[in-house]
Every structure is written in C-alpha cells, then in structure tokens.
Image (cartoon, rainbow, N blue to C red; front, side, top):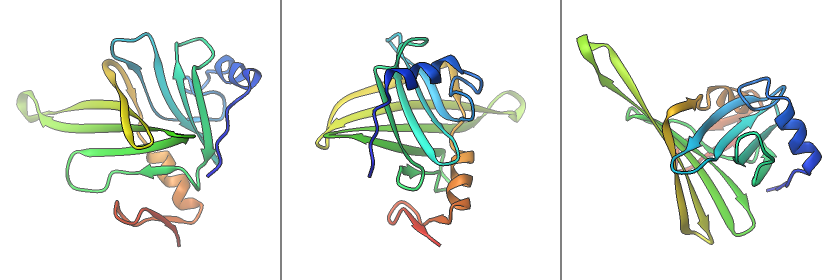
Amino acid sequence: MQRYTASAAMVLGLLASQATADCGRGNIPFTFCDIAGKDTVLRVCHDDFTVTYSYGVSGEVPQLYLSEPITTVDYHPWDAPAPTSGSITFRNGDYAYEVASLFVTQPFDDDIPSVTHFGWVTVTRNGEIVDKLECRPEPSRYVYGGALYERMTAMGLVWNGYGRGWSEY
C-alpha cells in the first residue's frame, strides 16, 4: 500500500482551492467535521483515483495529510439493515487513522424522521488505541461515501462484506 506525505506547496494548493466543500478543486467530499474540544478539522476527500485524509487547524497547512489510491484504501461501506455506518482507514507507518461515521434515523414529531450523525477518528499505533477524536455534532458536514463506493465499483471492484472486503469482479 502506497503512502504519500504532501509537500507544503501541494497542501497550500489544496487549501487555496476550496471549491468543493473544502476538498479542493476536482475533489469530492467523503466526510469532514470539526473535532470536539479542539480547533481542528478532519477532511476525507477523493477524486477519480485518490483518497486523501487531512487533519489540522482550518485555513492552515494540515498537521497530517495522507493520500492513497482508491483501489487500495481500506474502505468499509454501510453493510447492514442496522444504522447506516461505515469507515475508512489510512495508515502511516505504525499509525492507523480510522474515520467512522454513523447515521441513526429516529422518529421525530409527527413521525417525521430525524437523522442523528455521529463521527470520530480512532488513532492507533501498532494496533493499540492512542486517541479517539469525536466530531462535533454541529456544524456537521457529513457526506459519507456514496460517490466513493460508486467510483470503486466503476473501477471493477465489488464489496463482499466485512468479512471479505473488496475484490475485483
């Protein structure tokens, strides 16, 4: 699995072109949110071939920027009749950053459903949890994955469930 750390010029270019939901020109938002208790933002975006993870203070050069091909990213889409959930994991040396989202639909006044969004990133080192950062509920800007799923299937990949993951047709 390839890992890339963006150069400062590349990161500044991404930040300067916040045309599509803070993801940069030509990129599609996957999930992004403000981190509770911190002045930081988490963004996961993709284009037709690459998925990126960006974490840091909004408007500044990210503290961490990771990128990898769509065909190798560890993406687990919603896969059950339970609440809509899924995750995507990026690796950087001994560290892994699992970004998870959960949407729960609940009855509201007059049986109009309300959707509650939860999100977080779990940081592990050599498999041990070192931090879990929760997304603030507001402003939440979850998009969560439909376009990434569609892009992966268009590239000839098929989701086989959590036990088996992605494979080629």
